[in-house]
View (cartoon, rainbow, N blue to C red):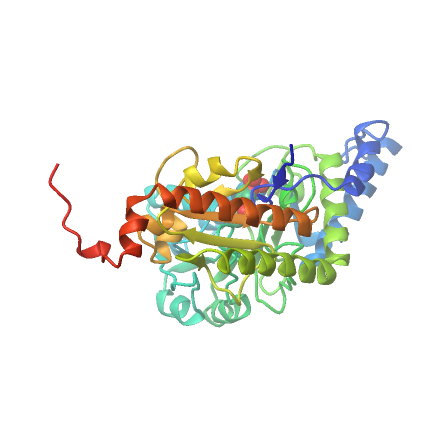
Length: 403
Ligand SMILES: *Cc1c(COP(=O)(O)O)cnc(C)c1O
């Protein structure tokens, strides 16, 4: 049975080249990178240093500014709670946006219980925030702005350099959850005025359970209160024995992603556009969510009106995708990200996120388009709403019988 994986925004397979780099560090090179008195430790430390350089090159920062973590959830927690606690004397106001990942929203909500104030900025229909909105939201006691680089559901890319400029002008620290952007589109923490940047290996063909946080060391020197206390590793910001094989994998993944970024980005956006063309030329009443121009090359989010996302996913069971109706755990709440874009429950519930990756082929796309068209048509044949709409009945004006 043909299986197609179009859920690369949820996680990616480990690239075989990455695995090859990792294997020696799971076998003979098992040293602790903090062991200073023998060669096992030195070799492990050397491997970690190489990876630090590889990650730093993608961000445009110094290797000394890279802190290893267990992934983006932890990086976001260190950045947000760490900055809040370190600079809490200066102020207790934080700015984020409504479409942030839960790994940003929840630490912010947690801080609200501790007496911090958080402003969640609304976004446009395309999912964008503007530097002007950020400027207007900054108060005397604002200490941190946290704006996601590229959205994991819609692919929408925020105007990072403009927001960074406003933050610099106002003397407010700028964090970004860059998980979906890292290794996919150009990043330059200097040019973009970014002070903290969260990333994760498993979204760029590295292993799960490892990530990093960029923490600026100069102009200004940023400090974070640690979340974990212990041996004082990673400039005191993240104690714990380093996951050497994982870090080696993240480094290798970063190097490959950077080297292949231009060609891969063109290939992926070609596949994404082919998919949208295939869907939109064969189906009516479908809508593309997010900003079609300021968008990651690999994400396509579409609402198929009059069909339900979950039924759609079941209908195309050999294709792995995500639906906007079940994005957060197993709840049937429609995606809060799509609702923030102004979608009604009907459109949010009928949305599917297709996320292509390094191993996606044109055949995968064509197969998926065929499956989707077939399934949507079948479901709509059974949908009285679709039939009524086709007959020209304005569904918003229908007075439904009382139950
Ligand atoms: C996947 C993802 C996370 C969580 O990353 P983990 O490494 O799995 O903790 C956070 N933010 C975004 C935008 C993501 O896509």
